[in-house]
Amino acid sequence: MELLRFFTAGEIDDGKSTLIGRLLYDSHSISTDIVEALTQQSKTEGASGEINLALITDGLRAERKQGITIDVAYKFFSTPKRKFIIADTPGHARYTRNMFTGASTAHVAIVLIDVQRGITEQTRRHSVILSILQTPHVLVCVNKMDLVDYAEEKFNQLKKAYTAFTQSLPLKNLHFLPVSALMGENIITPSEKMHWYQGLPLLPFLEQVDVKKEQSTVPRFQIQCLLSDAQGLKGFAGKILSGVYKKNQKVVVLPDGKETQITKIETHQQEVEEVSINMPAVFYVKDTSNMDRGSMIVPIEHQPIIKKEFTATICWFSEHSFTYEQQLVLRQGSFSTKARIDKVLAKIDWYKLTDIKSKGIIDMNEMCSVRISTSQSLSYDAYTDNKSTGAFILIDENTKNTIAAGVISK
Image 1 (tube, rainbow, N blue to C red):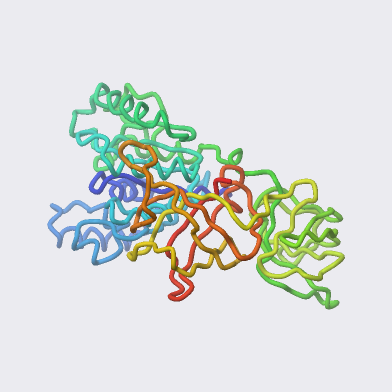
Image 2: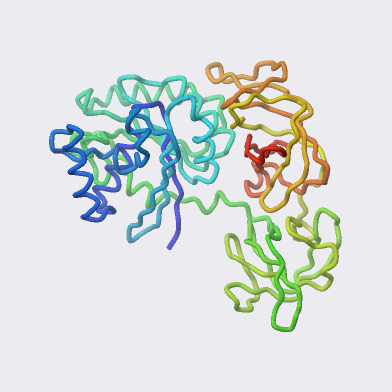
């Protein structure tokens, strides 16, 4: 069964946790004992006997006390048509880094907008991030429609405003949906109170949205570990990042550029003729010298870029501001190398959606265009061409903490 990853974004108190709670509750994806426990807890917290749907995803005590979601909460559920992984990301500006994390692997982004409050700075911030991360589908849910008597005019006004504001952003496949998460309107079934809306409700949309065409077809494979078969032959294990690999295919091992040939392919301990995207695989090749964890195996005719310097957009995670003296490690999948940020080219102005000059200082949750150099050659594709090889994280060499994540421009 096909898996869909999606996440919620938007301003604090726009109803993200309530929307996910309603989706899980009304689709009967929560066990009876959990429902009973949450109902009792809702009564204790004074919710008039009604279950507080936000409690389904607000799993941290600290965030309940503050009334905000402070971490990325992941939930899993399925319907007869599809499996789902939901990332409920924080709405507060301070936790932009968490939103970046939740968005990085998503097929669909659900951007919630309070119909009365309208587009906020955080709406703009999240929309910019979605455009940078090239999220395949963006579904704008205009929430709390019950507060404006389900007026079509109010929905159309926000739809027009959001379309105008994102005109300069390269957002993919933009969709709009009027909902009331609290009342359950347009979540599972079409809303009679918004009969003027002719599109799909939330769950049917998520069940039917097509994401396969967004995946790169250029073959990419990165070695995660070395294995040996029963005959003592050395195999190279990993996951197919994109495309299809076949037995007897001629390939090149990067970054050293050695040409060889795949002699055998195994998946799930069975020998096969070919493997495709997302499948675990073990490759056996003719010449195994100079091959190690992090090496990339690619077709000779479809090679990525190999450089020690590139331009990228990064989101700074650390509470400590960036300094040029920092010792960094760049990690791209299973490949690691020492790195440094040579120049901060520009920061992103969330409101004007333009770049502004930087003095070389990057603070937490800021996004910047930077120039990075590495001690070893990096094999990569531009993020817009292949997300798997065009994304990376930066680690502080001294503390071992992840301090930034980024996508490669060129």
